[in-house]
Image (tube, rainbow, N blue to C red; front, side):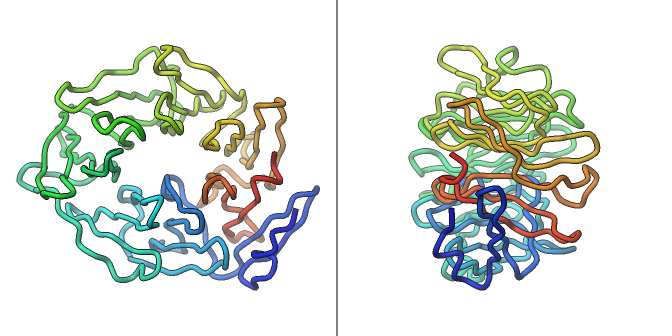
Length: 335
């Protein structure tokens, strides 16, 4: 399947193989680092950290292939928050929140600031926004503890939701409940992992046995009724929160994964010995296929597949002659 828009732009190179067209960004050289694609994209734009030795935040126009740099903010900081309607990216720099519009990404607007007196330390996870749009949230950590804190979008006030002697690497508001947030700490080298559901004013409840002993890459499903997770080297699963059970949806040696909003199509970085590759799985007919050539596990980047632009595209990093290339594949071609 050929996309007429990308096929006509010189910024992407069409690479057909086994009936599926891949569109690789020719210039500039880009990679999509782990956790560096914003969890939400618009129908057209994708925000990501990419580049060479000093990656920068930029916005990719998936129609034209144009990439505009926004800021030199460190890629080790929390993943940006993206408004699905406007395409605006909200970036946490220290305690300050700045907004970058896709049309003028290099001209940030100040949105607010978490009070350093209320929340000392450095940002460890975030940024996320409540379903009603009224609050931003992030996790700030010191040597002794971590705090889940919110920033009122209208009043600019800071409030502490939860304090714990743990470090988190994920915080995400529920897409359907403005007073509920996911807190998680990923497995280290495939071992361990913890997760909690934090309710405003009521503390945090551990998910415990709802998750496997080892888990990572947690994210909400589309309706906020469940949580996708990766069980390292074993598979991709879904926790059904209302039913209180978990389901292994795809048994595969996954390292990181994503799913379409309807949950029918999954993509993962799959380990095979000392290499990894991108594979997709259609759960409707229990069909798996490989999309990318294998790359070394020890490489400087990971494929990090993610569905973007309203599930129109699957985006991942391909390695071509040792160079990272952002690659798009039409989701329609994968179904």
